[in-house]
Length: 113
Image (cartoon, rainbow, N blue to C red; front, side, top):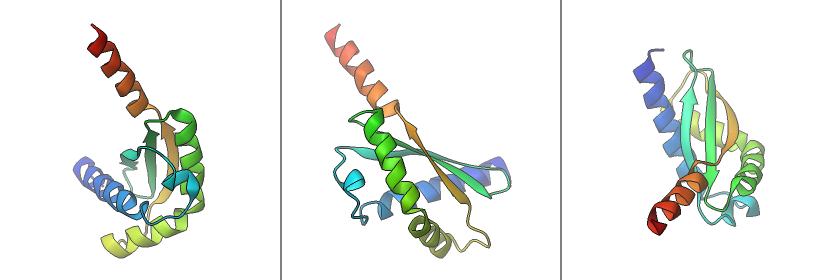
């Protein structure tokens, strides 16, 4: 897979997971203030995908959400393969990311000055 193709596939997976996570009834996901999928990195052969999850409430909320996403991995894989019509759906790995929390902290520091 070329770089552009894996990038587009990552953006499609990000869009699908973001839309599908609204349908999940897990309290770790639905109770989060601002939970977002930051980015998806697809491997060059398309067999693996790292999904970075971030929350405004902090890294602990993001870690709890990644556990919930790991349990719902089958739902996401089925939706991805149905929408993208892939021969082989990539194996999803969810990682907690603190980029939104870090960005909010930097924003507050810039407002104070």
